[in-house]
Every structure is written in structure tokens, then in C-alpha cells.
Image 1: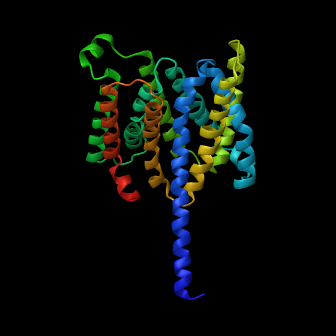
Image 2 (image 1 turned 90 degrees about the vertical axis):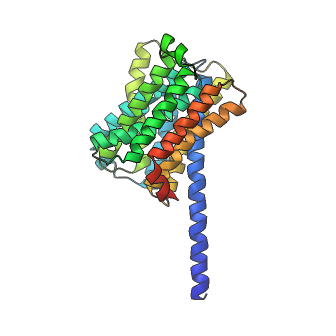
Image 3 (image 1 turned 45 degrees about the vertical axis):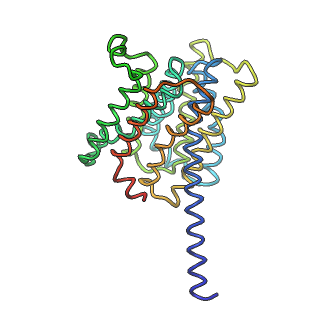
Length: 309
């Protein structure tokens, strides 16, 4: 094979790897978005505590197996980081999911995902405060724009009615979920480097150990009462809990984390698309507010978008 042919073959292989990585990122964010839609459905028969317990109980075994055979971690060294893994479990897997699922009992997936879209802007501010990362003037403007969009979403476009009624329980819980996920992100950036699937699998085990006693003490766990509920639970355990992490980490082998992070904004886009396709009702205020939030997030992450381009 000539040098030119070899170079062409390498370029084709690199392009193929990049395409697969991008498709993996799209799949990961698509599956994470499904957590909102399917979660809202399964919460009609399961309480949030039971859903969190069954989700991570079902996901822990395949995650551990995949971590062991793919990443081949040194488990003793991983377990030495148990304080960090415990903190990550309490925030990201227990706190965030419990708060999100509780919010979905009082709010629809559409509104919840639009409020959650404000998360990257909050993380940017938290990173500037706790990690001494520079927040540019563009980033500040992005946060302000996103905040305006969130206000439009929660008010439904009717400021007068909102000022009279105030925040709803679902909206307040979603703001709490945003804060908890921000804490999870900051802790994750400060924690020692660990193989990502291994870290997630240990967090899943810790989550089960933490949630199971509480669930039993409160009279649970509840069981899926229908084939539809069981199917929804299995979908949550497989797609957003296992496959999303596998696809995400496969993509990170090709695309740098900073550039891959831009794709997280698609979670809101996919969730909105799902709700619209399902024919669920929405208001003009939600659409306008959601668009403003997404614009704000794009502005706040302008530097990352330029790198991705």
C-alpha cells in the first residue's frame, strides 16, 4: 500500500470513529432525556423512593460487570476513594433523582426539562466560585438570559398571575434538583480520577445500600403493578442508567470531554421533542421561555461551542 493510500485509509478511519462518537453522544443524551418521559409515566404507580431503589438495583449488576471486564479497575484503589464516591452517590444518584422524580409528581416532563436546561448556566457560576474557573462577560450574559427564560417558563408567560400565586411545588423541587446536580458536578471535578463506568457502578451500589433501609422503614418498596409499569422501570434501568453511560464513555475516547459536554444541552431538546410528539399540552410561554433558556445556555457556553466547531 502506498503512503498516500495509507494516509487516506487513516483519514477514513478517523472520520468513521468521529461519526460513531457523535452518534454515541446523541444516543446517550437521547436516553437521558427518556428518563423524564418514562419517569413521569412510571411514577403513576411507584413512589420516587421505590423508583430510585429499583432503578439502581437493576442497573448496578450490569454496570459492575461492564466495569470489571472493560475498564479492568484495581478495585482496592477505587474503594480507597469511598468518601468521594459516597458524596457523589448522595448528590447525583440519590439526591438528584429523588428530587427530579418528586418534581415529576407535581409537574410535567416538559416544564421540568426546561427548568433543568438552566443547569449548565448554574454550573458555570458554581465553577467560578468553587473551582476558580474564569467566568467571562459572555458567560455572565448567558446566565442572565437563561434566568430570564426560566422565569418565563415558571410563570407561563403570565407574570401577574405568577407574582400572585408564586412558585409551584414541582418548580421548587426542580430548582432543588438543579442545585443538587450542580453540587454533584463540582464534587466530581474535585474528586480523584477514577474509571468512569467503575465510578458509576460503585455509586449505584452505594445508592442501593443507602436507599433500601429508608424504603423498608417507610413501608416500601412498592412493586410495579402492571406490565406497563414494569416495562417502564426496565427501560429506565437499561437506557438512561446503563447504555447512556456506556455510549458517553465510548464517545469520550474520541472527543474531548469539554466538547462532548456541549451535547448535554440536547437532553432538553429531546425531552421537548418527545412531549410534543406525544401530543402533550403546552403553552406559548413554555415554548418562548424554553427557547430563551437554550439561547442563554448557548451564550454561556459559547467558548465550548467554538471548540466543538
